[in-house]
Image (cartoon, rainbow, N blue to C red; front, side, top):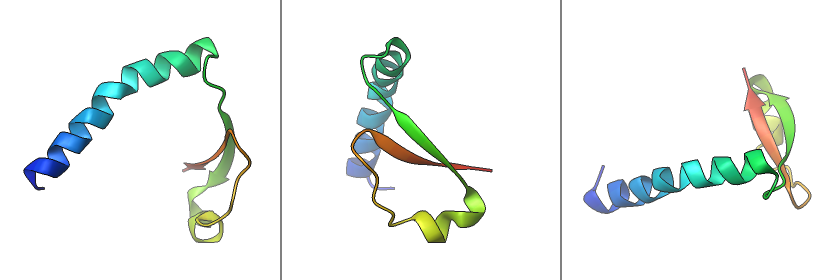
Length: 58
């Protein structure tokens, strides 16, 4: 991985605790749509409503 890519990954990882706290406190609404990993090809390009996210599960 190039140095610039590592810097981007580090920036994303640095934001995760803050993001998790916002989700946990309800400051950021997340409405997950659980989909089995076996259906990844079927749902990869499926549009979702604002605030909804497809979450692939084992």
